[in-house]
Length: 67
Image (cartoon, rainbow, N blue to C red; front, side):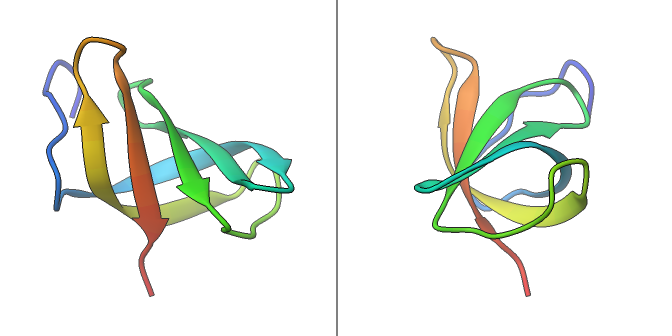
């Protein structure tokens, strides 16, 4: 997905970079940072997420875990 903008509804694999009390900080394959609110996974894990919102100006996205 490198060079491609994300859009709501896209499903992508993302690496968990940090687990916080409010959710997971993730990074897509193309290097775009994101947030999964309330999700749980180990740091370093790869998770499948569905994009709920993409902010092109800030180059970041919000997502939910798939499955």
